[in-house]
Image (cartoon, rainbow, N blue to C red):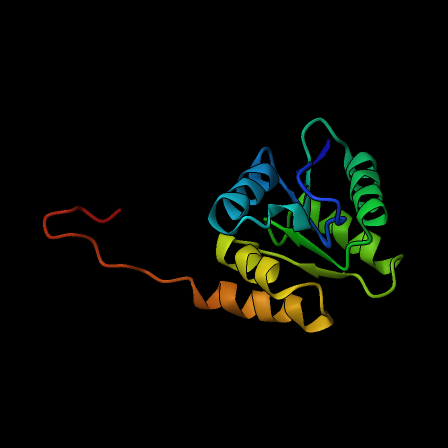
Length: 139
């Protein structure tokens, strides 16, 4: 299943693929925070087998002229399908382990070839362990 925000005449420049409502959720958050959720096209893997997921990602890339596919889980079905699509699509990058900071950075920096790598760097840099409050129990 694919979805995209209808609020822009410009086509998305990246696809976000993930499990369940991951794509819709992070695209919605980008929209709420910076108003540029329209640069993404979402794909989820619900009710899709491997071939169906690959087809859905390929269709989203083709329809949107995306240069990047962001996926949620590095070894997951969406990443496997996106990598297959990338092998058949010259110039398509796949960035795994997508997070909100990464997508915000990409949305604000455009579709230039270096934007995916820059977004990945920002996403990695945003990961931190914050010590719990006094009295809180760590799990």
